[in-house]
Image 1 (cartoon, helix red, strand yellow):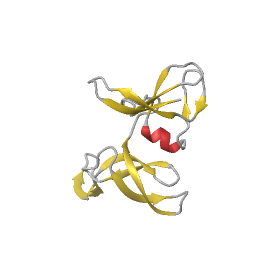
Image 2 (cartoon, one colour; image 1 turned 30 degrees about the horizontal axis):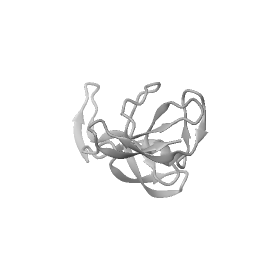
Image 3 (cartoon, rainbow, N blue to C red; image 1 turned 90 degrees about the horizontal axis):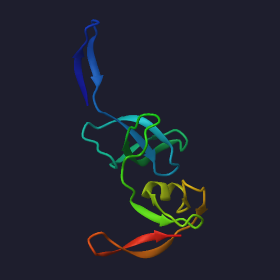
Image 4 (cartoon, rainbow, N blue to C red; image 1 turned 30 degrees about the vertical axis):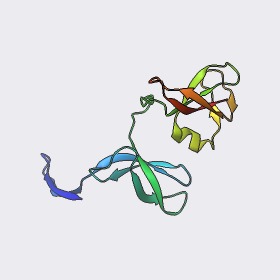
Length: 131
């Protein structure tokens, strides 16, 4: 995965080609930016070196976000806060990282959600989380 390039400054040589992604270790949840395959997409499984684990680990590639940018992806699930009783969004990645502990970003409540049935917008019944 390399290409020969030439620059206006006079440099001509072989450089690596790829897509800059944030690689998250599936064992310790450490994140680092790494040049991945050109065709890598958000959520792809990659094997990369993890410094804290001290070896190559399976992980997943995420799109690199700018500092201060908020997560624009819609939440995978939602839970009902045990303190302010509002439905709050939660991402699957966040649930895995926190070992299924949900945190309300409005009041700071922390707790484990209960599984409940919820009605989908199309009228289908689905599974959701409730606390």
